[in-house]
Length: 256
Length: 180
Image (cartoon, rainbow over all chains, first blue to last red; front, side, top):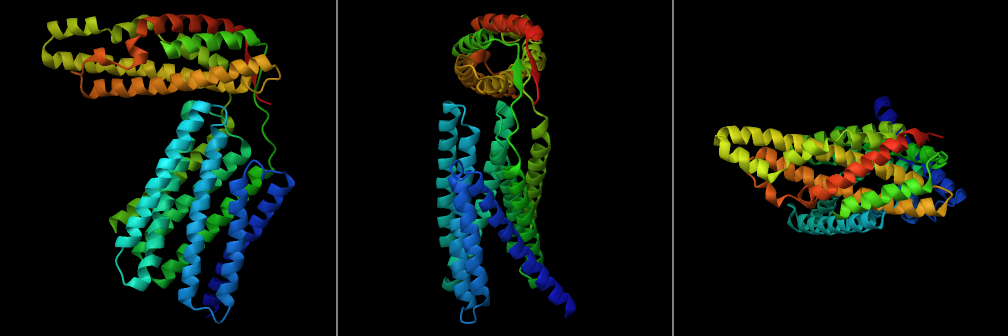
């Protein structure tokens, strides 16, 4: 009995903590005027806080049935997926900010992935097994798993692409991507296991794991949003003519 | 069951890669010397020889098909390493260009923007060349006369690379990058 209570308290604590920390993230975004540069991320943070307040309230309102709670949870989950994709799009634009050529290519790639994800979600929702009442709900979880996979892939692509092309990250964008990378990979792992193991104990354990990862993710966001921007390495004693000369030679090489 | 555990393995691999990038991100600094050294390390004549179609025809005529495939595979692999190094140099130049973009001098900023664009394009071209040459490693009988632009127009590109190499050697004594 004591063990069950301890587990329940831990679950509540890990459910509440990341959202309290998210309020801190919202405060930092407001104080440092980062909401102008990161509107989608700001919307995501505010939505997550509002979603938590709604679901937490519904969890303890006696008149709300499990079915009603599941529908609201699914609707907020889908909105959260959309916002996360928006955040990935935002950080990719920030990463490719210094090149028009890369900005266009990356946006096109992300749009293609978003369309593919939408198509996949619709197909899985229609053809997933089960009775009519459960079909929509289980379809949402299938879409969530697919979305986690796509988001995880997109984030890894951003890291690999930045390394490959020698692109420099700005600290807030890097921190957001890093946190989201941890969150989506944990989301992918837990959703895959959730589909395989339906036991109560495993489900609670996976919930603990995911909420714990959320706390780590939000702490990373706070750390990177508060950290001052690293002053770029400066080149000394190199003239503007020299940069121009490098550019002229490289331009010729690219055109050849 | 296997699919679920595969997804878990993918997720943990992704987590590992994200962690790797998190740790490595603070150690990267633009280095003009690295770019210069990478360009200078390229032996232009050797690379030209490796992708020369006349040389390939000669080898095809004088070697047995089996031996030709073996030699051709080695040539393609060596050329691939050259193209990869050229790409790495482009990446280092891109970093240099991004640093130049933060200069207080508007002219340097403008040059930095152009340099970055060209460096990104060269990096992607080198990737195309690497993929093509990788095809040459797997299928040594592949005709190298249909090579992508970076290798196809190599004569002119090689001359440019030589000039870039000279520039980089000049920059060695002048440019120093320091982290703030």
